[in-house]
Length: 254
Image (cartoon, rainbow, N blue to C red; front, side):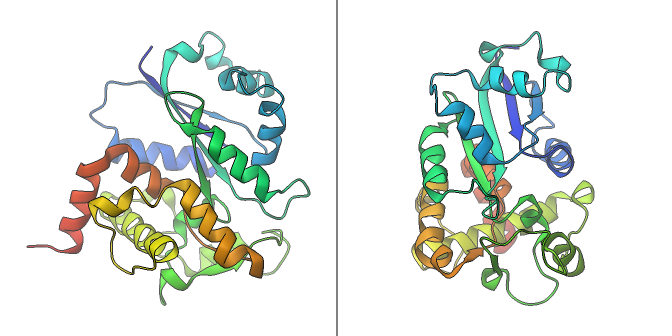
């Protein structure tokens, strides 16, 4: 399985559901083995383990943390995977939260064929569902540093109440097209001050480091975050020109 793809998730519930749905729409024709593992705690704990030895094998870290949970990984090693993708929440409310840590992690996990490629959801994985029934997604912001479960309605409840797509297991390809388009347009406003769906030459500017940098510049000083999901950026980067062309066709049908 030297050409396998490993997804490392923060959580064990919503993220695997998203992956299963993604596989049905985007990986149906691939011959690559698609495997996932969960870290089951926040991004800052992962960095605590990695920063002491940046040559540490990420897969071995995952296996040590969840040895009993991921028995299927026991016989696998880094050479079995050509690509590793990490999906974690911003989690600005936790005691260990550090924007400097996010910067360092994005710098370290910047290549899926080497250390792995990190994608961050703002504020958390439920951002994927947070396309509102009314209003403009580009205007949707939330608290950056308040615990998502601490207020009523909490973030998950808020998303459940206002979301167009509350159940990630039922997403269809057209739903994904809408979600990806909305996240790309919003990130283009955030990074480039442009309100349109980014053109091919603009996609490269919407990388994870640039997005976090603009969150840090425009929103985090106000204790806010622009809601953005990690998964649309994975889709558009992984599937590249084909994915963007499909979005352009959907947005501007002949």
